[in-house]
Amino acid sequence: MQLRPATSAGALVLSVFLLFSFAHGHNITHLLAKHPEFSTFNRYLSLTHLAADINDRTTITVCAVDNSAMSALLAKHLSIYSIKNILSLHVLLDYFGAKKLHQITNGTALAATMFQATGSALGSSGFVNITDLKGGKVGFTPEDNDGSFAAHFVKSVEELPYNISVIHISAVLPSPAAEAPTPGPAEVNLTGIMSAHGCKVFAETLLANPDASKTYDDAVDGGMTVFCPGDDAFKAFLPKYKNLSAPGKAALLEYHAVPVYQSMSMLKSNNGLMNTLATNGAEKYDFTVQNDGQAVTLKNKLVTAKITGTLIDEQPLAIYTINKVLTPKELYKGEAPTPAPAPAPEKSAADAPKSSDEATSPDADSPADSPDDDPADQTADDNGAVALGRVGFGGLILSVCIGFSLL
Image (cartoon, rainbow, N blue to C red; front, side):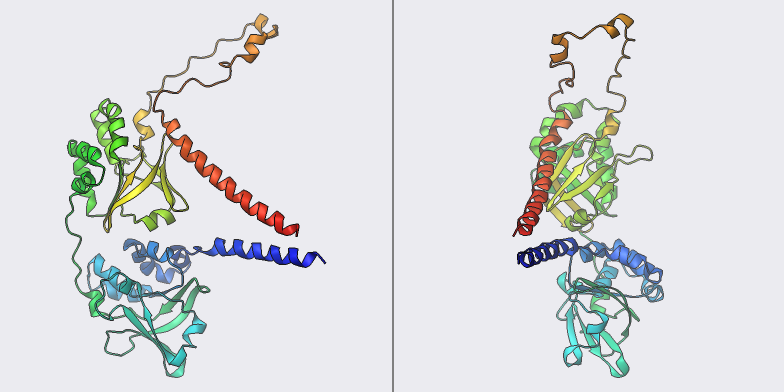
């Protein structure tokens, strides 16, 4: 008589677990990688950074076009910003699987797109009309078009029900509004933005270093993400910075930027190693991006820094504040003293019993005292909090499961 409630409770826990597991389970790049006929479309989703935006959404439909259709679009020699607008028109903010497409209420539907969501679409130009046509065909056309259906549904490519649907349509959706010339980003004052928002010490140090400053200026047009330490953090680090060699100073400053634009949603979805402006062949100068919930951290073997704010996030530039200075291990190679070899044990000492003082000495097995501001100390609190959070959550789930099983 007691098994039914426990079984129901177990099913409830399993359902909740599956819900959290699949909440953000899709990756458009991986889905399309299984279908080489969409390789060009897939590549430009990444180049325009639309892929990360797609991965960050649910209840979405991607209208993919094959390589031949993409070749026709690229032959127009549009700017990358106009191509982004056009492709964003192919991302519907609703779920349309093959079955739903053939069962549209009243035979027609108007779907908002990612182009509409950007705010760049004028009037209704960011909407797509989907209509059931004669003979079982389904037509697609932008709302601001002349009413003709230049593209038709070909087949379903991938479906994760009510999360993401990837469908193949026959042609690129024509839209004068999306194809209109789009100006590139206005020139921005990197150091001015940083100085005005709590990173003045880092900005002034960058300006005073011609090599690093030029590297930043050369990289920004192609896309760049900067992680600037707050004033308190960098001010405390200045004595160590002044002791670095000239190349070391430039490398440390360049280590705080990566040569690609990364929105916050991209940072959260693309965890892993990331090269920096300082990366140079064998000298990796990389760090690892990790996220725990909404918190994003940058980690190497010496320090873990947390992103604390956003100063600007407008393609091709993003600037974030961090709470610690990123110190690359490459700057300190060869500086640590090499421990002297241990003396060979004497035969008489090997057989002699240890005294009680030696056995209980606190210095016998404890590590040497760390210097002040040791990078290892900087990470202790953050790593401890993350570990505690994960254990606490796992313990909570385990407690719930045990509680329900005992009902």
